[in-house]
Length: 328
Image (cartoon, rainbow, N blue to C red; front, side):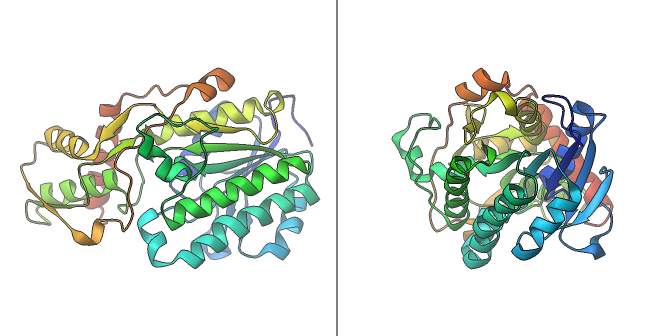
């Protein structure tokens, strides 16, 4: 079963139940209404993937079973999101991060090469792979040498390089290096979500008016998760025109200070609170300022972020108000 050029008929999404995956299913449905969306779960006990037409059990840590699963799904396109994505947590369990993010990604690519060799393979890489290269103070482009500065970033860089090698062996792969993104449904292990969660709890009278934070004098190149998903959709629609193995920075090119984001969230909420730095939220290694160069993605995909930043923050705040009200 195959769709028209640029119109895949069957799309397999790993990590479909995760933060980005849930948003991406919505974007895929809008962009490819005739496609069959197959959402992958690690365990049958997690139930069907909401928003998918079919659900398949697929654990990238179980390499021997992957080719049979891919053969059963018969995808025209695979979007590989399944990963350990929490930078802070990666310091606590680096071996698990490396196993899933590197070996799991390679195993998934090999399964596609074996069972669906004509399928396109879009890998969710990360802007974190550039790491210490950001210390130059210049926006990083795709040809900037990778210099990851934490276990998560190193695992993503290794997987990114592995996919580049697999492109030489016939895998039709696109590497999408998405920079920091946020939105509704994100876990509070990430800065913007952590701020919004605490503000919502303060509003609800569930915690004193004190915000616990990590380092505030850091700059990050933020995106709304919905803009990231629109980039993934644009890449999927253009895979036949893209060189196999291409890497694309998915970023805004506009770094924002973490402390300013917190101040904006407080202003939007009307909450008055003191701020205390929490040593547990600080990273052993950290980069002060992050800025990517989005020119190649704009040139090749016709993509650029469109959602106003304040709207993104309002969305995250509203989401956490609902979740706190529901008992989260």
